[in-house]
Image (cartoon, helix red, strand yellow):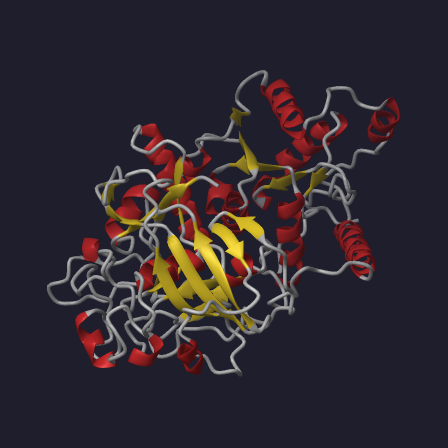
Amino acid sequence: MITNNVTPVPFEAYSGKGSYTFVSYAHADKAFVYDCMEWLRKQGVDMWYDEGIAPAGEWVEEIASAIKGAKLFIVFISPDAVESRYVRSEVGYALSLDKDILSIYLKETDLPAGLDLCLQPFQSIQTSDTDWRKKAKQSVLDLLGKTESRPKMIEALTESITKVDVFEVDLWPVWDAAGEAQRRRVFRRLETSKDTVAPIPSQGEAFRVPSEDDVPSVSPQDDVVPVPSEDKVAPVCPKEEESPQGKLVLPAKPPRDLPIARKSRTPSSTRIPVALEAKVEARPQTEPSEPEVHQDVLGASYSWIPSGSLSVWVPYANEVRLVEMNEGFWMGQHLVTQETYTSVMGLNPSHIDDGEGFFRENLPVNNVSWLDAVSFCKAMTNLGKRHDHLPKGYEYRLPSEVEWEYACRAGSSTDYYFGDDPTDLLQHAWFKSNSNKQIHPVGLMLPNPWGLYDLYGNIREWVGNSFVNTLLGDSEQDEFRISRGGGYMKSAAECKSSSRSTNSLYHRFRNLGFRVVLARVS
């Protein structure tokens, strides 16, 4: 017998089709967490957790799928949990999916400012309170929509589980049992998938969190990890649908006034949707009068983007589709700066090139993942609500890909919003020809007609829903996300209105940042 402090897994993770809770925790806290989970299970709460197995690359796709399917997300918070990149990633992913979250504090913990703001709208419970178990039970059952009754048979089975002394347990049987449970779940998923047709094929091989060794040390010349392109989608032609970005109209043939000559700009071999024309439509009869510029609680300025439409050539459907944005929105005039990000999130993850005379607070935040950007938007929304500085019914979020290109083009159909001559880019963007291989302060170049700066250079910008999500009316996404615009080491040809890249939502690079929109909650 091996004497050690291994904590055995209390039960197999839930794999049924009913409502369940996803449990996120630091493995350093698992002895206490497992005890809490066993108690909650007796109260009728079905739970999915990693069964004590440290997350590894081949397991993370299942973790993401479990978060997607969960009705409630519980995070056990402690100093170790705050330091865990796995816990932070799981919380960030739950936030991006707008899951209900319950925070259970195991110890007094100082949260980073951004995480604190993100979790503020959700209920929290302190285990230092004498009646915390009663509060936790009521909160979980209410959120899951269950009653407090527990079938006697299940309760009896739970009570009959033999308790194991965690200080005298053989390591290998515990590990083998956990591995066998995982294999059973994998086989069940494979069997289920035989009869299931996904609406959009997977765009990546696995959903995984890169380890510290996986995250590349990126040079300006090598800034994109080779990943499958997002355009590899099935030739699906959905019916007309409503989307958060507006009404999707599928014309039988291209409109007469569509510049057919523009099709020469879109090689027939491309498999990526390409915008052909942006139209701005004034709708005074339906659209409220909005100020041209909005300032958020931190003083950042946003330009009003009027309603309109974007015509997009869809290669996998072999037709032009018109995406109408029935409502305008505000878009940040500048990329989010390091100063702004630090004041909200409590840290600055940016790679900093020390440029002579450059003020770091004016540099765009970079080296942020897609989940980091989403968390910032959630925190900004809660900050605005706290200070009563948010228009009613609005939220801060990332722009969709359609919104980004529509706002970037500002009604133009040329390569750039200022025309087709790439030499003019020197006045509008920091790119390979003039950046001196450095990130530059925001707002130094000329803006587009709607007052938006740095769209074509400096750093690329994460966006929310992709062309595929909007054009196919599909909300499913895999590990990969889209970034738009150019970068400080990109050529002029790579800094057009149509420029786009694909990266894992967990990856961070020195030339990746974001800007924010303020839009009506869909």
